[in-house]
Figure 1 (cartoon, rainbow, N blue to C red):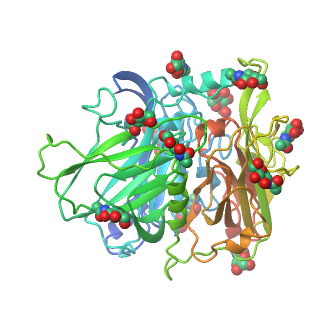
Figure 2: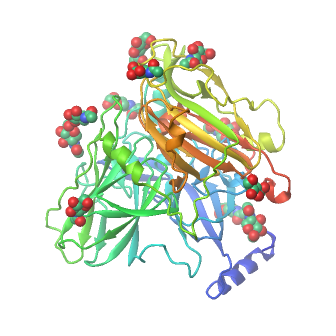
Figure 3: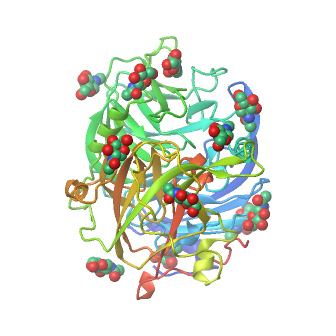
Length: 560
Ligand SMILES: *[C@@H]1O[C@H](CO)[C@@H](O)[C@H](O)[C@H]1NC(C)=O
Ligand SMILES: *[C@@H]1O[C@H](CO)[C@@H](O)[C@H](O)[C@H]1NC(C)=O
Ligand SMILES: *[C@@H]1O[C@H](CO)[C@@H](O)[C@H](O)[C@H]1NC(C)=O
Ligand SMILES: *[C@@H]1O[C@H](CO)[C@@H](O)[C@H](O)[C@H]1NC(C)=O
Ligand SMILES: *[C@@H]1O[C@H](CO)[C@@H](O)[C@H](O)[C@H]1NC(C)=O
Ligand SMILES: *[C@@H]1O[C@H](CO)[C@@H](O)[C@H](O)[C@H]1NC(C)=O
Ligand SMILES: *[C@@H]1O[C@H](CO)[C@@H](O)[C@H](O)[C@H]1NC(C)=O
Ligand SMILES: *[C@@H]1O[C@H](CO)[C@@H](O)[C@H](O)[C@H]1NC(C)=O
Ligand SMILES: *[C@@H]1O[C@H](CO)[C@@H](O)[C@H](O)[C@H]1NC(C)=O
Ligand SMILES: *[C@@H]1O[C@H](CO)[C@@H](O)[C@H](O)[C@H]1NC(C)=O
Ligand SMILES: *[C@@H]1O[C@H](CO)[C@@H](O)[C@H](O)[C@H]1NC(C)=O
């Protein structure tokens, strides 16, 4: 549908909305996001936080598959801002993707930017969050994409739905926490609480006003849209006395399976069906970290209440049975259960022949730092390269051919091979540093193996790729074996998603077709590791025709 973003815009929008009830035409959904500071109190501590429209968590974006969404983000806060629409594929349209200095320069205080994108071939739950500094701690919210008009879910229609956004709360200003850690070269302080819809619940002080409750009617079915918006913690989630059925992950339908708990990493979303079919009562819903690496112990549990209608609030709720924080077995078994629906209407288009084989090692390490407490600082790397943030957007540098911003020599495999998950290396832990990207020809089929290493410490890492979904074709513990492991890949119905955990001391293999031109960030979604440099980007070249090429930048793209 052709139209211009000018005087006809409003009229067009009204006409589209008028037609929408009896036509399957796309609509335009407009949102105003004002970045404002608000005082919020949790755990008996009040502090100013950065929010969208004064809401914590922020407003939900509702759209339908095929819609065009325009969000005017206007920054009234003292920090630079940029917002990522996590999981939206942004076909040929990296300008609207959001990561600061990757696809755009930040929206400065007092400025606006209109994120303008179409939602093509996707439906389900995604989310949006700040993609600069650590501001996503409080600047985040849900994206709910309904299927096209008249298209049902591939599972029984729920009676109602609710969103559960899992997060983390610091009593201190998160920016102070982050910069203090960076200055010292040490890990920043861990959060003071976990939260469900912004509320920590009764295991934390001053919880009387800060406990989320979801009221349900006995006999009804609820679709719960669960989002992990935490900065640094993979989380288990469970509801006391109830099993739940997983039906969708990262806005892709999956083969339904019933479980007593889910595992969800930062960046991921999970839709589950809940049947309110137990004895009417009050049940706790809980979320707490999965941490099977010998690093820190954090079992702080966020609690919300599942409240059956008519049951007095004096009834003491039951606690959920969450897996233990170090329950690796649960995590691996859970990952095994995730499979694409792969139905005729929703096929799993797994690349079967591979043009480019990539193998990236994930390392933590220590580099020299003259100004740090110990003369050293903690860092992280992919193929032994610690990513250095550029000063201008990589997408602009690519599109306008600006020199000396990045190099295109990110290696397809590590320079040196070693026993990746063997005994911790006591050798030199230094890394090389640079803004190094990997170039992919348009429509290349890619297989990427992400290999955790024991450099400094093994740990699980949730990796997120912008601009694409990928298929998780294999996962294992120890070192990936290129001779024997590919034979075990699931190429039939592997889970399709945008964020995947690489197991502690193990590996994950993903496949995707590079058919979306642009510059696409890939990083660990644990913010502490992203800060330490666990990130890189792909430059996907244009294809032959205009339909295979990047769109031109919007006029209001923020300048540097
Ligand atoms: C969104 O779709 C409309 C209608 O097809 C098209 O005119 C517009 O260019 C698209 N925008 C983007 C950013 O792809
Ligand atoms: C975005 O919102 C700001 C603040 O309301 C307004 O000044 C600006 O004109 C808007 N931009 C567009 C393109 O609507
Ligand atoms: C980090 O935690 C320590 C110990 O609890 C505390 O003394 C310090 O003030 C905290 N620092 C920041 C920046 O939150
Ligand atoms: C949940 O599933 C487990 C294992 O399948 C089963 O033992 C248990 O009875 C179920 N609980 C409920 C409340 O349905
Ligand atoms: C956390 O772990 C400690 C030690 O294992 C235990 O005493 C405490 O009850 C746990 N807290 C929660 C909220 O699970
Ligand atoms: C998990 O932690 C518990 C203590 O909380 C410990 O007893 C158990 O051995 C640990 N399990 C594994 C597999 O490390
Ligand atoms: C300081 O550096 C030494 C030597 O590299 C190391 O053993 C020690 O753990 C470091 N301490 C801190 C707090 O980083
Ligand atoms: C790698 O190290 C592990 C742990 O020390 C050891 O079990 C394994 O045999 C080593 N693998 C190779 C190929 O040396
Ligand atoms: C990483 O690179 C640094 C600097 O070039 C080097 O000293 C170190 O040995 C390399 N480490 C590994 C594991 O390749
Ligand atoms: C990408 O490659 C596949 C398989 O070779 C081909 O079917 C498809 O048409 C190509 N897509 C484009 C947009 O060129
Ligand atoms: C905000 O972004 C602009 C543009 O990149 C940059 O020049 C400026 O230093 C940033 N401000 C802060 C406080 O980081």
